[in-house]
Image 1: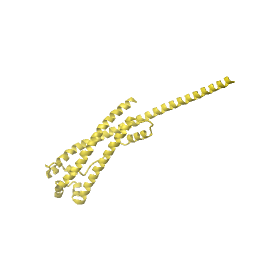
Image 2: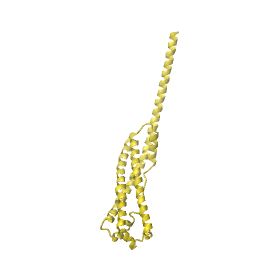
Image 3: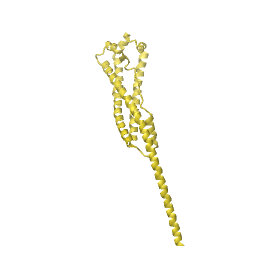
Image 4: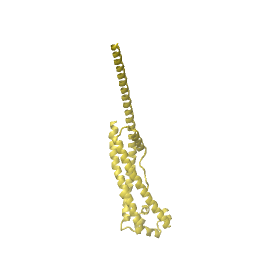
Length: 228
């Protein structure tokens, strides 16, 4: 009788062990499948972000080229040697503090990465670094764009409320003596210097540093995606 009970217990234990092993194997297979699925998903997201980053670096490269060309105008018209003839030779200089085209970094890839990171059980060092860098530069660029935009709006408002010849300026008529006097004044030169500082002491360095960071990130993305 005891042998029968013992045999029954051993059989029961073996069955439990087999069941546990089966569960562990199933869990392991499921985890492996989930890991492969997550890895494949991340690969697709990183590929999308890589394409976004290429667009951003191309756009910013073009912006930096434009800024480099405009800086020559700022330097010339901030100098002590500027004359009315200087403005007549370069009419585009009349709009140095009145125009600017802002831009935004691409959003699709970074939003997908944010969603992946928030739902992932494991941290990925490359993803974390990308998100941190994007957060820093996106804030800096948006804030700087806002400050530049506000400065342009303030300059436009000042001219609109204080100088009736603003209408002539906006329609390309630049021979108004009062207009020329204003552009030769210390008041305008101060506004030009402030705008120069916003663009070339803030925006331009941020864009240059972004390009450096973005190129390094593209190298890291290429390396990661080649490993997949």
